Image (cartoon, rainbow, N blue to C red; front, top):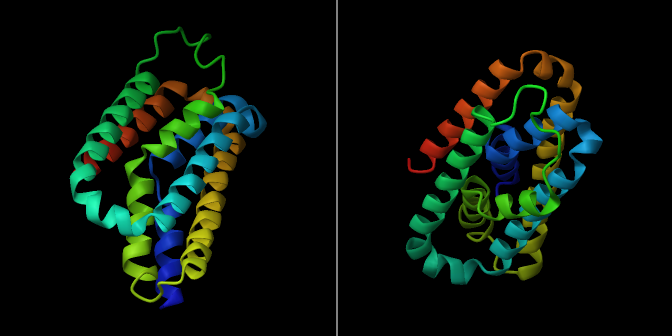
Length: 192
């Protein structure tokens, strides 16, 4: 396996904006790194679960992916559109917005239907790992590298949300419009 190509793919895909990255940054910008920890931990655990399920069930997924991919796309797109709406058009007044952090379960469930993360793991497996190894130990090992690098990227996004918290709060409306737009863009890219 070309480890440089594998790591380049994993790092670039993990660090670029995606639904999970945007949501952990958004949550951290409103509640700080510690205040958003439950939600972010749900995202991280969901990411790990997706990776391990993808690694261990790749042969089954290869046969069924063409059948379930459209369902996953629509579920993911609908959820992203819903999140974009909730972020872009909150029902509360500016002083009431986001007074309660999102839950661990909401982060976990979001990540489990996050099409970008699902495709991330399936691409890493089908392009970089499986053509060069059929050993379950090696498949899990390389998938674990992808999980760890993905976690680092998610934590960097959460940290940036927390670090720039006062800036995001000062420009809350603009921040929400940008976040809403980026989530809608992520929704559209699911079908490309």
